[in-house]
Amino acid sequence: QVQLVESGGGLVQAGGSLRLSCAASGSGFSIIAMGWYRQAPGQERELVASITNRGSTNVADSVKGRFTISRDNAKNTVYLQMNSLKPEDTALFHCNAQEKRGPVTLNYWGQGTQVTVSS
Image (cartoon, rainbow, N blue to C red):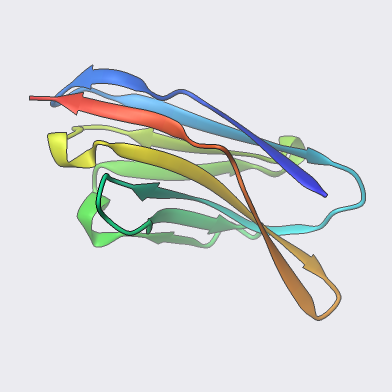
């Protein structure tokens, strides 16, 4: 079982920055990828950015050039540096981790951290 603990959300003015962190803990797991998703009120959850344990990244077009995802494999921690934040970035951000167990890939989710960007 993997537990995810998120931190770093908050209230920021447009143009500001925030850094989200997500630490995975547990025992006997093999995490192959971690990432961040977000869900705004009335909208579906969407991928923001993800990174594999080999460092390959996938970043949503809406945040390219503004958000950067990185990972510390030794700490099983993923970071999301968010710059030039816009009011439309306001959402509940969830950390995701994918664990490989033989042929099966399991998904784990954090409880979420709120990001609010004021205009």
